[in-house]
Length: 270
Image (cartoon, rainbow, N blue to C red):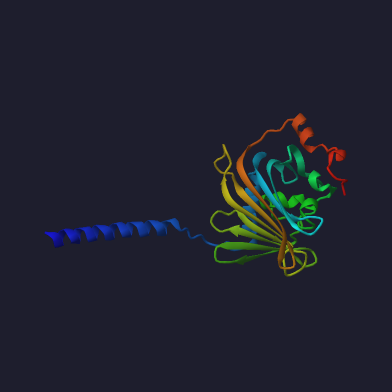
């Protein structure tokens, strides 16, 4: 009887192994690539059209070079209020000041400051140029990545991603947009300034549903890397804890988008 029992156990083990392997194979999705740049662009625009005003909270870690050229790390809680890619703000709480760090986009205007560093800047938005504080538009660029600067768009395919290659009116590549083939969301954007090496790379990861929304996804991890040549010079990471819908009122909008008291900065603003 023992050989018979051993045989039955062996068959049962092989059966479980087959079920396990089949289940693992089923979990790995294989999705067809986009067939044209127009198709990929249309999918991204469909995602953008479904966006709603959102409020998010999380934590930011900023690695930058100080006045002595030494790399410094700073971590602080952040709050994000988003109406559209043309109107949003991010505030960072540093040293018990809820508005110590700020990035604001309001139409074609931007405002960015960091009180601990004595930085205060305003101007016209232009994504993909400058550093963090002169470039707040890139913070949410992944939500609507095909900009007006994409005059000529081509499609390239890699193993797991589809890549939109955008060129400006002068024929220079200004950005590459990496799209998840199955999820159809933006995984990465590389920004160029008519050179072979990107000056800025933005990665959006861990997409999850927005609280109360079945079809709206938002990333829970955002990574921003600035490059000098082939070396990353600065890095910022935002880990988002929660994202939910937001309805603003006039008083709140005024409080969020009003300019700060520059005299409250720890250093003289630049």
